[in-house]
View 1 (cartoon, rainbow, N blue to C red):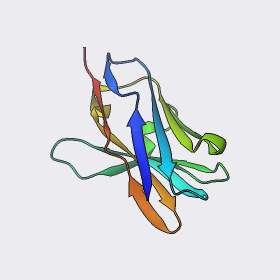
View 2 (spheres, rainbow, N blue to C red):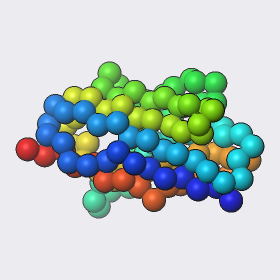
View 3 (cartoon, rainbow, N blue to C red):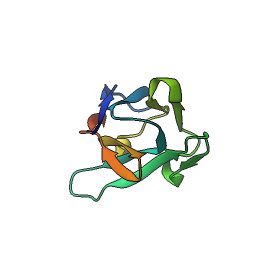
View 4 (cartoon, helix red, strand yellow):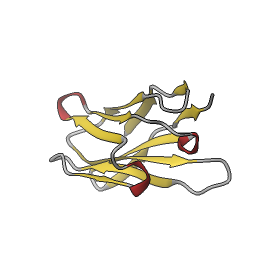
Length: 115
């Protein structure tokens, strides 16, 4: 079994920054692709960014140039540096990891961008 736990969410003013972390633990031999997803109230969960085990990244158009995804394979941890935050970035942020051909999700962390 694999557990994912997000941290780093909170309340920030527009234009501010936050750094999210996603730590994986459990029966892990190696983690494949990882990603961040958001879900706003009343909306479906959407992709924010993904990163492969080799470090190849992909971003949603709405966050390009503002968010940076990264990972530390030795620590089984993924990060999301979020800059120039906008009110529309407000959502629950979830991390996902593929381990042994199965997808695992964290419980999510709330990010609220408001003045």
